[in-house]
Amino acid sequence: MKAIIITQPGDSSVLALEEQATPTPASGQVLIRVRAAGVNRSDIHQRTGGYGADPSGQIPGLEVAGIVESCGPDATRWRVGDAVCALISGGGYAEYVAVDERHCLPVPDNLSFIEAASLPETILTVWSTVFQWGQLSEGENFLIHGGSSGIGVTAIQLAKAFGANAYATAGSDDKGAFCEQLGAIKCVNYKKEDFEESLNDVDINVILDMVGGDYTPKNLRLLAPDGRLMFINAMQGADSQIHIPTLMQKRITISGSMLKPRDADFKAALTAEVEKQVWPLVTIGQLKPVVYRSFPLAEAAKAQDLMASSEHIGKIILEVP
Image (tube, rainbow, N blue to C red):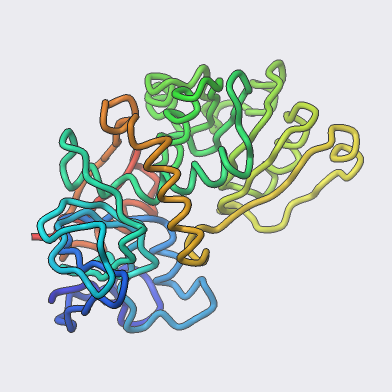
């Protein structure tokens, strides 16, 4: 099969389209003929060696959509020819990938493969972090930083669907307008306004942050009593100042999560809950994929460069011929 290989740690030029052996599905796995694969910042972090290991020879990619090509021993849910999308731990930038069958979701009839490939990583991340761990509830106020990102557009739509009030930050007026069209009550252009000042009259209950750095003390001041601050990245700084008396006075919970390293059973349980709680919203079109642009598999470097530029709104996808 053809696959994108990280030849050595570095910039996007280290990505190469090469021939690799087609995987054989193990017990409980299915082999997916990939039609589309999502591009995520984690892929860039992996490419540069950001996870503390040499990525040479690895195939990036955390989510795919395609057709079940074959089923391994003891794989009983899916049949050859089924259209599925899946969360994977790597290997998505390829023509084929072997996946735990429990991590697959059916592709709804109203979605293309490109649209379906944009959903697993964002929906599973938002559901586990914001709803399971952060316990966002109906009527609460929710702030998502990076509202126009793949995670952001999913978080806004899910918050609205489950009765919470979504607020967001984004880096341009156009991005802010898009977030508000999706359902955000207000989106602050952080390049023009201080988000803390702009949202100071709103009692924020849950914040989903991928920025870190000097956002952290502002987040803590914005949070209402019993507020929850959830981290999924720290793009602007891993170290932050925390005013402990503020935590004590407001009883604030600070936490964070990384979905990629979680074990197979956790991901299976999470996928099952998403299929029950969220997938009906996808099938009726209430939760819509937001795809900014797609690239051929061979142009994975261009796709990652676009992601690194942060010019996009929503998801960037690779098409596999």
